[in-house]
Image 1 (tube, rainbow, N blue to C red):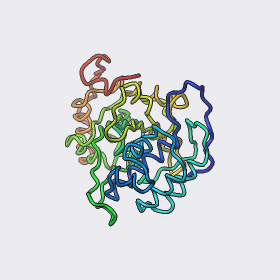
Image 2 (tube, rainbow, N blue to C red):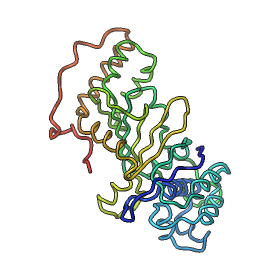
Image 3 (spheres, rainbow, N blue to C red):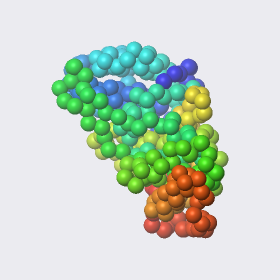
Image 4 (cartoon, rainbow, N blue to C red):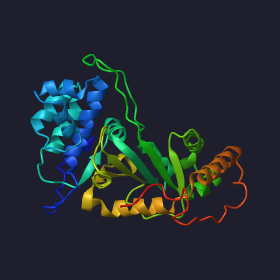
Length: 305
């Protein structure tokens, strides 16, 4: 991840959304701790604290001191550049809800995925899905005593129906369409086609609901912890927002979820498009004019707040 000085987004005294830097760094700390095979209790010994405090630090439910973050990441064997970038984020104590120069590396993406209860992705450009690295697990480090166990996360891809037209025209951007179909059929991800093309801030918009394992907060508390990352083209720095600073991104994702086609219908259309692409023929027949109401089963991919 590369960052320059993040821009602070002021908020009122009653703001319930957590500041972004502690959330992002807390996710990274949890990621490296589990990769190292350490329990929260073992991690607590590093800074002479308790397992409950480690949990609170990893979920940004308490202040994250720079010294603690440095000591823990160093003990976990995190790469030096991860440590430097984490400390850069924490160097600005203001309550921040937007960081406009943020390019998450695979480690940071994995940290958010594994620590999230759900991840929703919206894209109108299929090739941009390559920007989202799947979470991976690894063998524990030498200091660990148990293997890292990745958390279970609900993955939902909301893809513009323009993908079907691109596939019919054999656009190179849809070269991996058959793999997307395989992921959907195997249940790894839930893929829903979205009619039209929403005015997205970037080719790929990702919503993480970061809670980490063992979250006991209410649904309202969980929704306050949503993080929106807008990935741009050609490796350009992304933007990250939450709370009031991510209102536009949140509304766009809600609109995509509310208008999304049912799962089986979407998979059927994608399967036809992949087959037509492989055979070099047009998609079989016209696409049905099917637009179920929002209350129809399978239409909404999640509730809105």
